[in-house]
Length: 276
Image (cartoon, rainbow, N blue to C red; front, side, top):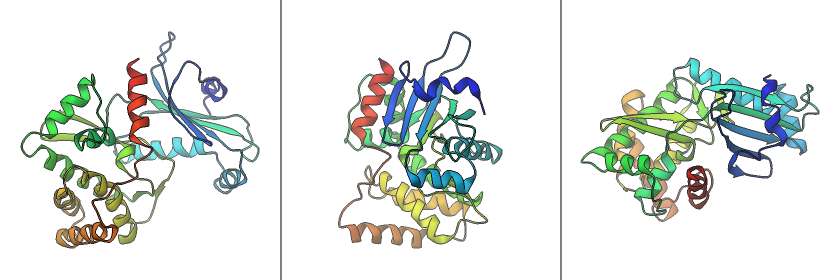
């Protein structure tokens, strides 16, 4: 446990609040004069019975579980934030009311914000990195590279036996060092699990969650996504994947409006707060 993080359990006054829910708060802690870098902070509240039951069953709090998941992903060579540590407000997990996970802040582009800027759902001005990213993926073939790369990224997670029931573009950051090279970073580890294998049902669940967002920009995005996915997991057939996704879209009656991790107005407000 990292006791230097205890100060953030009850006091986030100097931090930029990115998201605040009943049972958790996500914040950005500025760099300190002592050399501590800018931090990503996630504070969990364990007030309800279910949360404490989960702590008891796992033998650890959410903060510690996040740290262990993030560290495991690093060992698997999956791009993540650099973990700093965790802390609990009580040494006994059965009575802990708060826990915290901290990592280095990643100044990368939110994939959710990029997609929804491109689809016209939100408009963010004075965001140089975002505008450059949009310009990169709007070049001929640029969005195809993004979709195919994202498919390969999700397939790599599954090949490495990593599954998250909350995998979506709201939990993925990107960087574009070159027009034909896009790197993807996972930023949420709360619902991460490491399995003997990621079966077809769970694989399709993640594919649908992520591909739905891409289809907000281009209804044919599923073709490139599925090609990238099947290139890594070759026992999946590209055409079958495409047909499955299109059938799901047809059942829902329209192009999907995937539920991202929060609404885009909140994301825009958070970006404005960061700039301020």
